[in-house]
Amino acid sequence: MVGPEFPVLSIGVFMRTLVFMLSLAILALPALAADKVTVKQLEETLASSKSKSDKDLARRLADLELTERLGTPRFNQLQSSLPGEKSRAALVALADASAFLSPPAPEIVADAPPDRATQGQILSRAVDFVAATVTKMPDFLARRTTTRYQDLKARSVDTEPVIVTPGIYYLLGSDAVTIRFRNGKEEEDNATAEKVKNRAAPQKGLVTWGVFGPMLGVVMRDLLKAKVGWSRWEQSPAGALAVFRYSVPQDRSSYTVRYCCMSNWQIGQTREFQAVTQYEGEIAVEPKSGSILRLTVKTAIGPHAPIYRADVAVEYGPVEIGGKSYICPVKSVSVTTARDLVLHGGFYQGGEMVGQNVDTPRVTAINDVVFDNYHVFRSELRILPSTEGNSP
Image (cartoon, rainbow, N blue to C red; front, top):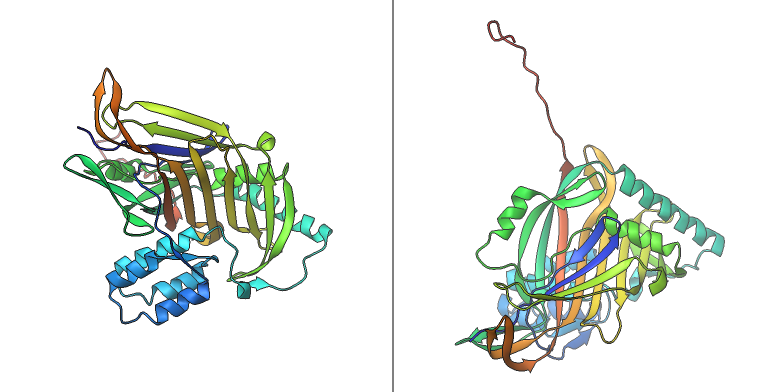
C-alpha cells in the first residue's frame, strides 16, 4: 500500500537566464466556507476577542476571509496585539490571501488622476528606476524567511489517506536561507541552502526565488508592450503612490508557467506542463522618483491546464546596504492553485502506479516571504610581509 501522491509545482518567469520559479508539494481538498469581512470588521473582531485563548482565536481567524487588502502597517498593529504564535500565524495567512485585493476606502486618496502626460512621465521614471536597480545594485547578501501555508491537508492512517478539513489555511512550516545577489542574479548561499535541504522531512510548500532584479525586469519589459491604465492614488508610509493597472496578452508575454507533478519521491517520475501565459496586475510607483514600491502579477491560464492560479505580490522599501539606501524587496506573497491527485490502495507495477483514484481536488498554497538582514557581500585579501628567513 502507498499513500497519496506528492505533486511538485513550478511557475517561472523565463527571459534568457532570468528565472522566477515556485515549487509546490502539498495535498488538499476544497476549503470550508469562510465569513467575509472588511479590514475594519476584522479589527472589531480582534478587539472583542481579547479574552480568547491563542488556539481559539486562531480558529476564529481561520474562519474569516478578507474582502479588502490588509496592508503591512495595519497588519503589524494587529499582530502585535495577538496572544500567541497560532493566532499570529493565522493572521499572516489571512493577510496574505488578501494581497491582491484593493485597499480599504480610507487608504485610497480621493485626488483627481494626473493628466495623460504626467502619467507617462511617472511610468517613464519607473522604467528608469528598474534599469538603475538591476544594473547598479551592489553585490549583497540578505536573509529570506519563508513561511508556507496551504488551504487543506491530507494525512495517512494505516497507509490510507484521510482528508482533514478543520480550517482555511494550515501552517506547513518555515525556514530561513541566505540569498546572494551578485552581478544582477539571485542565488541561494550554498552553506545555508544545504542546511534547509538536509532536514529530516522533505520540504513541502512553495519555494520562491527571483523576486529581485529578474521578476521586476521581466514585468517592466513586458509593460512596454502592454495595455497600461490609471487606477488610483493610494496612501502609503512613503506618501501618495500612483497605482497603474496593466494587462499583458499572451503573444507579448515573457511569463512562463511550468507545472511538474512527481508521482513518487523515491522513483522521481514526473509529468510536466509548460506554457507562456497572459497576465495582469498593478504597479504602485512613487511619482517623483519612479521607485516601484508594490507589484502584483496575476496569471490567466487556460481552462484545460492542471494549474489554475500562479500569482505573486511583492512589496519594496528602502534598505541600507553598505551605508547607502536602496529600494529592495522587503516582503512577497505567492499564491498558487493547482489540481492534485489523491490515491489509496495503490502500488507500483512495472514503474506505473496502479490504484484507485479517490479525488482530484484543488489546493491553494501561500508563501509568505520576508527579506531582511541586508549587507554587502565582500571578499577580503590580506598581504602579510615576509619575515626574515621565509622570503622566496
